[in-house]
Length: 202
Image 1 (cartoon, helix red, strand yellow):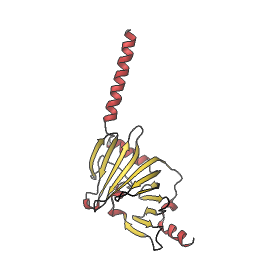
Image 2 (image 1 turned 90 degrees about the vertical axis):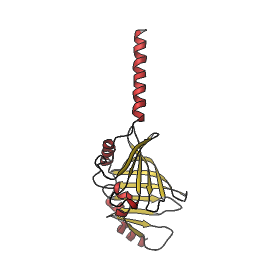
Image 3 (image 1 turned 180 degrees about the horizontal axis):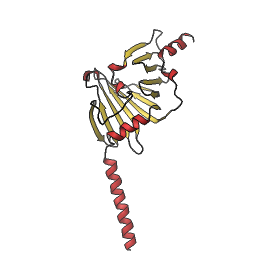
Image 4 (image 1 turned 135 degrees about the vertical axis):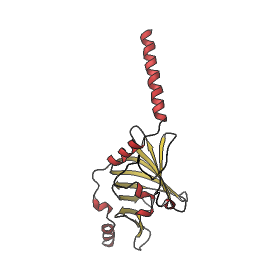
């Protein structure tokens, strides 16, 4: 009976410890390590736009500074981030792609070469919301440009969602599925000029 009581005591302790850890947010140090170690990532996503329309596709991230978002049918649009520019290829238009400065969007915070959230001055909040650890960032030098919220799950750490709030307050939500390391990413995937030439030659 004594042995059984000891076993139950150990089990109870482990359960209480597990619940306690589950209630804790992931530390900024661990999140920084996760982002720094995972600099070649890809995932499937579902995007909810501010007008409640839904899009799906794949995202590829090659830090520092590069990202590719491929939208599935019927949209078939493409966004390439590279060289501090965001280039948008609209499949429904025959005009040249639109270009924007990466530095004018909160996405630049995710694509930086060095990610040190512990010492970052970009963090607005670092909280636990249900099962998610949420980190909200903005550029302290240009706070009116918008915000980026990153949502993580623990055990192991994985990026599950980001929410972009632009300068006008519009929200774009991307829910990620199967975020994983992709060692086969190439620089050509993030070259907007090469993509434009390819499309011209089709």
